[in-house]
Length: 224
Ligand SMILES: Nc1ncnc2c1ncn2[C@@H]1O[C@H](COP(=O)(O)OP(=O)(O)O)[C@@H](O)[C@H]1O
Ligand SMILES: [Mg+2]
Picture 1 (cartoon, rainbow, N blue to C red):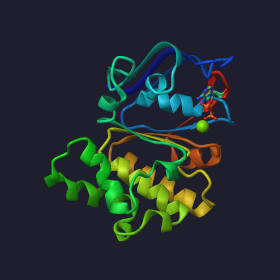
Picture 2: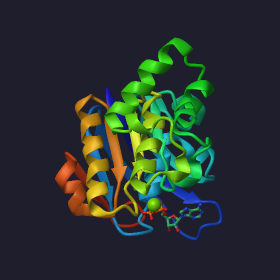
Picture 3: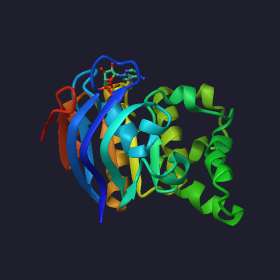
């Protein structure tokens, strides 16, 4: 089964004067590692939000066409229900942290989804190992470097064991070596069979790590 199918999707944010996405069709197969690039305002974030159901459930507007994720229609399904299979790491991860310490941040999602406590250690140690943050579990989040914080944000989503991981410019303002480290982590996830979709302005970085790069050219015009 395909991981993501967009069929003739058009979306215009409430009160916006033009579409963020126009008549976009796209298929992402299970297990692909896809990069999405394009300059600012071309719809990268909107595309990712639509995969996670945040568009149109939380970010409202006129939505036409359909998006399915593992065969499930995102409009008919609540984003909370989708979150069991779909993990979204938003762009501004610093403002997304809810806890003071790393360990509590990692547990937060598991608590919210009623994951059995007996599974916690397995899930947390795996997520921390993949992201290389085992040594940071008892640290205070605000004392970490930018790169370390990004890895904590990714690990907290990974602990949910999503089948589809969506990341919006996860390496945003990091220096080049830290950026590449984040992408190496993503490549490892792809090797584990997780479908990964990542938005990033630096197309060269995507071409180096991703199996496929999609370039948005505004209002949903796509070049592969
Ligand atoms: N919350 C919003 N309300 C209204 N318009 C928005 C909102 N978010 C984004 N847009 C508009 O939608 C278009 C696509 O934006 P976005 O998906 O954020 O692109 P990118 O991530 O490539 O910078 C832009 O024209 C932007 O101004
Ligand atoms: Mg964006």
